[in-house]
Image (cartoon, rainbow, N blue to C red):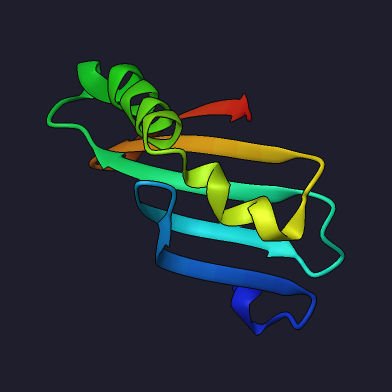
Length: 94
């Protein structure tokens, strides 16, 4: 949806730090960057834990390094886990 907007940059499965982030996006005005990492839970009770695992993966693999050339003042990470029609979202400022 945002990819069609000319004022946003959206990258999927891009190398970032020591791995590949699921989705990275930022406005062309370069004031904030967003990292989305997705995980699938095998049951509803794993939703919160898997979202936290996603955040931890972003931190361990240093996906925020993708934004070093842009020198963004703020980077927000979303760990999102899914199980069937339910989801859990964890958010962390990096």
